[in-house]
Length: 187
Image 1 (tube, one colour):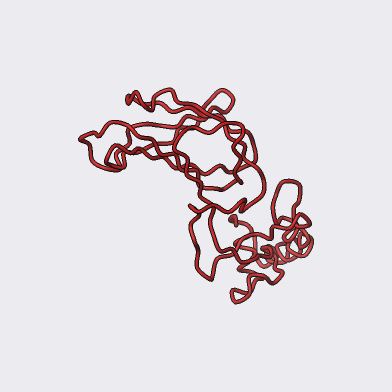
Image 2: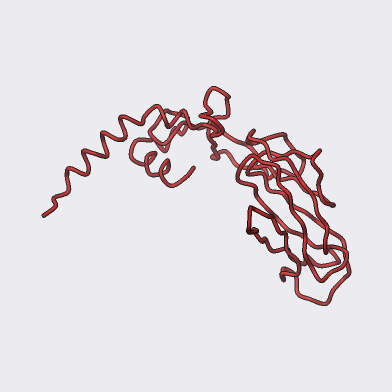
């Protein structure tokens, strides 16, 4: 949930019933948070849902550096620039990086490092718009009080999951907002 839906939910929602319609949306219980672990770069044949935790693990030399020290990076090109994400030594010759894609797309990436076993590895992965996606044994299990936007296709507004549970309140929200602005006195 973003900033605006969170505020709107607090203005009109019921913390005891997140599934109830509210200005901030309507939600359904979720039991897992998707995480997929790869031990090698992915290919265009691999698909995960957006907001899945992608965890790449690589084997390499057993170094004498502290755990959790940045020692490689994942570079994701976007137009004329790139996003850079840090990767860490996890001890015992294992290297790990976690990345969470935020939108549906074909994601291309490469790894840069002074560690030859990791340097120049590259891959692609398809990110789809089906949160929370397919179940995996590596998913994080959640407690009883976790909710997400409603996932039915009828709740999508374009590519935005659950957006129709917010959009239907647009006129009412804007009228309320205008009334609140009227409370302010400007000199």
